Length: 114
Length: 112
Image 1 (cartoon, rainbow over the protein chains, first blue to last red):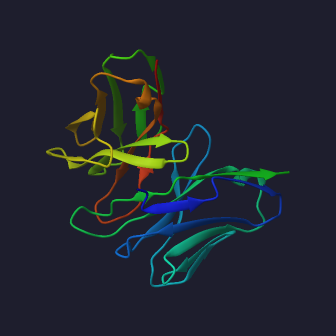
Image 2 (cartoon, chains in turn red, yellow; image 1 turned 180 degrees about the horizontal axis):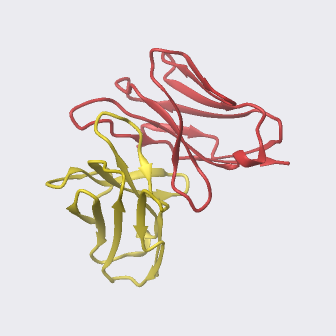
């Protein structure tokens, strides 16, 4: 079973709109929540990450909102641009003897229309 | 040049054939990983290695094996490929103490 559930699987947004991707997790021991961005033909790359001691983190047009009690976190892309069209993966990990092993969500394919 | 290099980038093979995917890195990271990407299933961990003498199974290791030939090289083998191993495979690296993974550009494998 997937420990990190991501929705929606695909998303179409008009240029200038807000893109929202949601993730829910099961394991309360998770303490690191990154988002990865993947362009066609490329490997995923870290976009932004949050730890559960804060409820929000913003980097430019990208914001992570984190709700510890609901075990949910989301990525908001403000003023979405065609160049943001990519697949986005949420992930979660916990620090233990095995190191920070990431568990990924299923991915969301975002298309931003001009 | 890419920091994490995968070869081949594309491979078509037949059921029952042995396949090796290779990964090399110039980042100097100690940890290396092999992931498999399937639509809707995200990235699933096949094997990982924290140093040259350390090999660990991931979530979906059945049908796969790995070799860590050097700190910079980590190869994935399919001893007898089957069609449901058709997927996009990624090698990744990380440095101890950080959560960030650095991915290669992927190897697309098709098993007919």
